Length: 164
Image 1 (cartoon, rainbow, N blue to C red):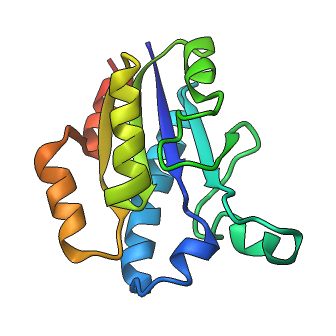
Image 2 (tube, one colour; image 1 turned 30 degrees about the vertical axis):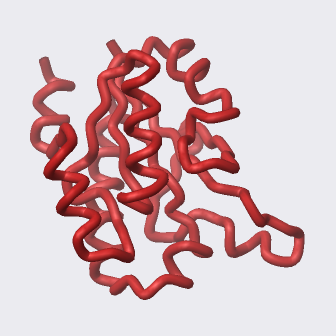
């Protein structure tokens, strides 16, 4: 079984326009980058998912992934126009083609795209977990409520799973 890390909506338009402290973004990026590097180095998949709803030629640069997120040449990219990254995209097919059984969800926003994609993975039969310290929200209580009611995974557990 392979593992896929979904890095959702870590884009300038969402993270620079919203009132989120830089240290909160930097901490989430640190966890996302660490787990992504562990997965890449062990032949697992990292997929950067970008919301393109509202994208125009005049604001194209705002839809790019923030520079704090490391993107590797072998990472995959997927665009979406809905909160659930599975809805009207090829995400399910990509995961099936790569024999993915476990999906780690990270990114922005905890109460929207992260949660909807987490649920979308479960609905399609994938084991789905949320990366602890790897999600962001503009609402203080959204992260704690997302963690409280969902399956979480920490980076030491990811490392342990890969080394088994």
